[in-house]
Length: 539
Image: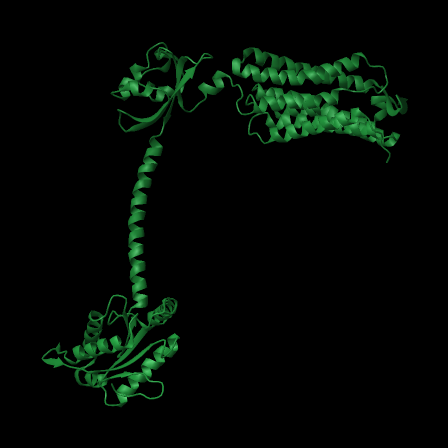
């Protein structure tokens, strides 16, 4: 496909993508009319792009196709513009489903005629030469002029509505309306001039180019004057329909406007308060009403009535163009339900906090139960296996020794057989208490199984470990454990192993201590044996 270059084509593309960018920015605004304005700008984008492609193409077929595509924007833009104006001037009640359907008839019919009944819209579409460029020469038919008259009519109607809205708006919103009005008039005025100077030849159509200018003005209104963020709303729709109470004061704090919702918070008709000082109301709610009128304020007040009623009260100063105080806006909201919910929530949170504490205590108990022996309250074998690995790793990092004493009660079966298992349990508990009392901080004692116990002593050498084992051995031998009319005694056999000499792994160290203990059992019991790699001898 052959193309021809022309500055006009470049201007059309710039205008088109300016319209598209503005449409994207406007579409993201959550405001009435945003979607329709985006639609108007998208129609302008299609209009400009198709016009540019029609001019850039050199073949008749390509030019005609792009010319027909252009009418997707030409036909829909006026209708979308009218809907946009009705929305921003808050005349949505005119846009019923039936009205929208009627407004859609003409654009759809025009698009169908352009594509499938071209002869009714244009009497002639052929190639011609203008200034060395291949252009599409157009001679309009009857349907074209009907469409033009209809489009100008609805656009003029929209401009009249926008003009009336501009006259009625306050100073701030009037600037918004004037910018939108200017951005809308520019392409319409250029289009009218084109129709007046129409000569049947496809001259440079500046209407699509002006869409870029209009888009820039719309962007200025959106970002500089907060159009689509703040739109003028009629007083009746803003104040009368609000669910919050609204009071407007002058600079003498006299009430100049009040909405019907205030009746819920007062004992008299709101309209009777017009012209009276706000202190007459605030005195009923507070002993210090001046605090509410000291700059911008937000507070809660409790109405003196039953049941209790709580109000959220916001006071905003209003300033004129010279930054002088011209009045105040007071917005009042009933927050009684919220206060009740907060009260219930606080109760629920307190209850939940108590439950969390109980759960934490239960978790601690469960953890203790999981790592302690139920009978002796010493750590169990599972805890020993988990903790000894950590202690050995720490001993390796900090290069200090660690000793393990494996203990087994002598002739414990005889105690059970002679006095019963209850007596055996008492002996085990007493032994556990004795071992615990003679342990250092940092040592930990475990019930290894049955009548076997293990005492782990980090950061202690074998000589000191032997001295402590001797002391513990003497203490146990001296025990007299009362059981009914009997005093029970017992002896114990011990085996000692130490890291790193007798093993660097948990299993090796426990195995060494166990072997030493069994040597003590086999050599007469009631003694202490230190593990030797080549031989085991009684100490």
